[in-house]
Amino acid sequence: MEVPLCVLVTGGAGYIGSHTVLELLLDGYKTVVVDNLNNSSEIAIARVRQLAGDHAHNLSFYKMDIRDKPALEQLFASTKFDAVIHFAGLKAVGESVEKPLMYFDNNIIGTITLLEVMAAYGCNKLVFSSSATVYGWPKEVPCTEEFPLSAANPYGRTKLMIEDMCRDIFASNSDWKFILLRYFNPIGAHPSGLIGEDPHGIPNNLMPFIQQVAVGRQPALKVFGTDYSTKDGTGVRDYIHVVDLANGHIAALKKLFDPTIGCEVYNLGTGKGTSVLELVSAFEKASGKKIPLVKTGRRPGDAEIVYASTAKAERELNWKAEHGIEDMCRDQWIWACNNPYGYQTEKTQ
Ligand code: NAD
Ligand code: WQD
Image (tube, rainbow, N blue to C red):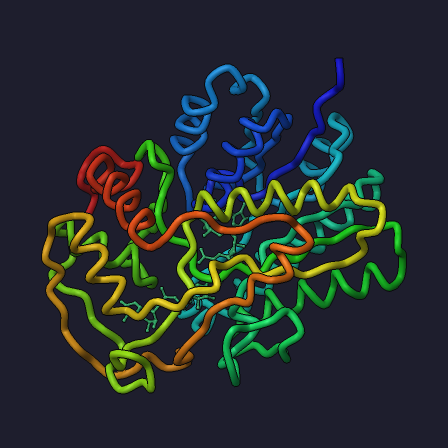
């Protein structure tokens, strides 16, 4: 019998990580998750086990900070990893402006520590969670992977710095294989309603905020800017179903074993732009709830229109997003109804 490949997933208890871990297990991979649970709950791991059924025995979880080098070394000494998918990181743009050092420490030092340990133990294949944020305010759309890159805030700078680190490491030693995935705006949840996004505190992003309005945790959605040059004046983004995104990681992982791969970057989006008002209206339809709106000024740093060119991922990863906005809103609502307070069963705020 063929021995299954073993993948280390950093940040695997988080929103995108948990959905990806489930798809890895269902695809037959042995999966080891390390997560410090800074922005997640071990309940997500238990739910993934439940959804994975017969494959659940292939999942191990360690509560660990990736900056804890001795702990990471011990893990690599005891397990041979064929590849790493690296989600672990802090991701709140506003917080990164307030606390840049915390972002540099967690995201940059964390990644350097991981790469050093991988190098020491002969593991040279990495899939990294980058972001469409590296396109800044794109001059035109769709964004192709060749667009100029910039960082508008410390969070974005960590993504750009890590991408550059990977390019430099590959230039120094072509044994490394890197796939840098630039996600657009992941939303939705697993259709079972068992796993989904569970932001701590007041959400920064549009969909989690809409969800909290729908379940009565917030009174109204602030629409940031109604004077953009878009179809209805509100910002346009490329929302992608988190299950599609998770499957994009499986496609990327397979590509890492292609002998021709070096250091490659792929957009993961749908190629379709949706405005704030369109998303609100699709969510209202899916949930039957009215979302009260308060129209306010633009949020500093926001781009007007961002959506992906999906051609490269389709061509080279043989991957394409399958779900539309209706599915994303439906699954978000199932998650919200089953878990109005996220993984906490009790009302905590
Ligand atoms: P998330 O916060 O739900 O998941 C990140 C996980 O990493 C959390 O479980 C957290 O506890 C863990 N973590 C953070 N620092 C760690 C550390 N030092 N050691 C161990 N674990 C640590 O976020 P997500 O939405 O699932 O995002 C995953 C990755 O994708 C992040 O790197 C994020 O920057 C990137 N990304 C996210 C989005 C998005 O909109 N959600 C878009 C583009 C890129
Ligand atoms: C989407 C649209 C807002 C909240 C961010 C990060 C990016 C990436 C994805 C990690 C915009 C509008 C939002 C609200 C609103 N994350 N909005 N009211 O800004 O595209 O991207 O998440 O890498 O790096 O910057 O996503 O969901 O915050 O905003 O009107 O309460 O919704 O102005 O047009 P964004 P978002």
